[in-house]
Length: 211
Image 1 (cartoon, rainbow, N blue to C red):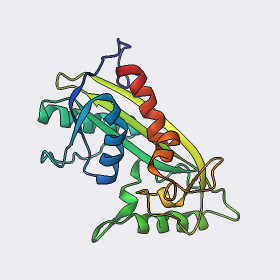
Image 2 (image 1 turned 180 degrees about the vertical axis):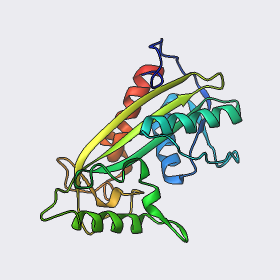
Image 3 (image 1 turned 45 degrees about the vertical axis):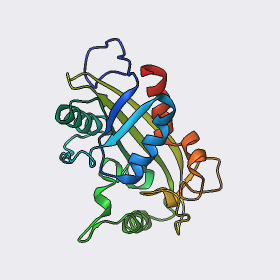
Image 4 (image 1 turned 90 degrees about the horizontal axis):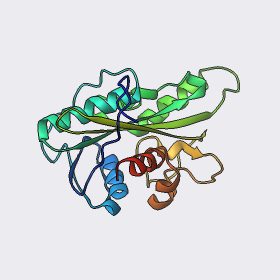
């Protein structure tokens, strides 16, 4: 897919070389790097380059991913890939959604154990016998220094469990049980997660289009 709200155009291909991962989230950078490794892409994170984190002012996952990718491409002079992803909980009307990282903010920095507690408390307060259905969304935006952007959006459905289980994921992974599975994203091995996750869904679309 090409940029949100823009006229359809030919998908631009991405050749081997350096690519900026426009994120300061080490777990996300590592996971994206693993997904890109088979395609001859050398990744460097925005944090490694000393690039600032932009204010995420978009109202959708796609808009925020584009904003981050375009800034990184502008400042680095390299193609840049940004991910904007989050947990959408049915009982909470889709929250935390694009504010998933903000739910983790504490006086000492981001704490996703606290974020999971906040989500669980909000579900419990939402009514009698609330739905525990939820889904993760991942929007990927690939930007070039000349302003061209491609974007792709993936999704995985599941339910939320409590207490959280597993230390292998990051973010809200330890409370998310994917549909049809019996292990959380915090319990399954990275390769297994890469096969079914929202990020993997978006990456399959990206790889089919640009490589």
